[in-house]
Image 1 (cartoon, rainbow, N blue to C red):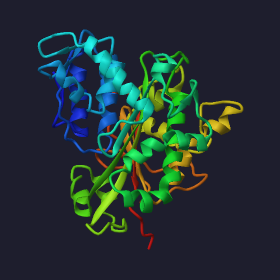
Image 2 (cartoon, one colour):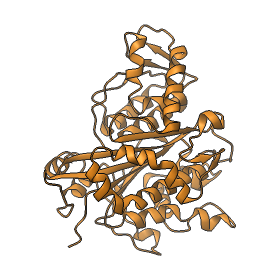
Image 3 (spheres, one colour):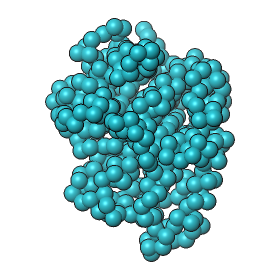
Length: 391
């Protein structure tokens, strides 16, 4: 039994992949609590559910509830709704083995309507999920689409996402007015490029056939802690620890820093397989990282003709926006890599070999960890809302 609950973390999710590799009929049990504060945890859990779905047979999801009245509380877990919809063809029960799908349908409808209206609530965080295997009405959100067509005009895209941005920054009125304004355009541009990337590349398999099921989405969360808490809270991850330890993030009067977690996920075939096309070639971790490096270069794309210039700028643009500010982290296929753009600055027209990427777990730029396969891709960005001194 794989348990998703109070002790779930990025590290425990990676351990769950180990358990999954040993048992292709293992069940997942979901409890009502999730206290983990790891950056990227919510999309990492969604990615795990998708991997579990595509790996196992005759397995089910067990929701740890005593009565149906607890379902609405359980659905406050951000990862649960997209995971349930994605895994809908599997058995979903309570601990007594009772089929919960008739009750879950109502919860799904409520959750989807809230996402459409961008009225999720529940603190400074927002999850917006699309489902490509459902109808346009039930699968796509007006935050990203108009009549099933991705919003290509960034001004309209900005307007469509306004409610969600306002929700995430609702923690502090002064933060909204004073700190967010200089960075607002950056945030919209990043979301636009990442979600457009999933629309371009995250909906079909290597033979260009629609994926069924398939989910893509955005998770935003504002993290507020003291400077010391950020610096000491990631002792097990040297990359994050180094990022948060720099002294020129300007704190407020309580010595608190604000960072935005911006994650975009898809359950498609992932960066590496997408770039290999129909090839069935098996690549080691270093070879997969090299493909990712090329994806981060301007105009390096599998698109051809007129689409090449349009579809080849997204990730390069994001690196440029994050330069000297943010941190980029990607989990896809068998690798988990990051780039601290405070230390490894963006350079225009760079070669792939010049793009330094680091292993998420051992913090080295060589000898990358070969992890167990994860479905699709999760990109998590750490963006400082606190002012930065460039002295």
